[in-house]
Image (spheres, helix red, strand yellow):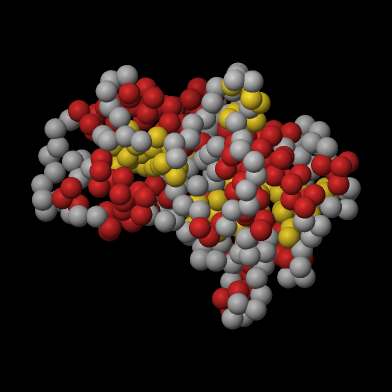
Length: 351
């Protein structure tokens, strides 16, 4: 099904209310806390009314401070507590308002939660959800602007979820918490104002969720996740003005990735670009390209696969530099124009 992100300035369509990405996250929290008494939330600043995107506003008052718990500034302790509580029947949601500092919680995530089910023959399933927020921009600099999804997608046993639409922000958060595996759920602050109409909540089986075609096309396949999928959609709309029709695929789940939809798309369009909001080296963009090329006859390609990522540098604190640091819609458009309009020089033995 084709999905689209809507103009954040529009409040309704045909009288129907639009829901923002950040509101959708709060709806998911309310649903989980109301329906599942074993769910609790622990994280820094969760009692604050101005918490990032107001996604936690009023939850402590509605459900009590014993279930919505404001924590000390100790990422390791909070995550370790959540992993431990999950072994005793709870469904904890641990919130890290800045993904950068999740690295301090790497041991309970990578060495414990991700491995216990495997090490103990499936007798222990840490059913813990880690909400990690990408909170960049605004000249926040190198230590407060990182998107580390590729780190965690590298680890067997950790599911990694990155929604790009309000509906997925709600439904994939619910399915993450109900999943029996440890899940890293990553939301991006730059998406918080995006709006769309939401259908009724449906509890999804996270293990069955796959990449989704946001827009059909015939000339090139663009793969993204989270905010990169939004950029890809906007670029595809611009490209249509030049009669270039891009197919946009939203990964949604970064570990594990089901490549069937992507492969079928590339076999149709014969071109592939991956847009990612993190670095190129050992990143998700290179992984997607390699995995697709392994699954197709490379002779069908009309151009070499390409990727748009961050430069090999930490984030700057200058707005002028920020404007050229992060991927932009016009950069995607210009690259695709060049790819589609330049005659292919690929030979049959290039791979």
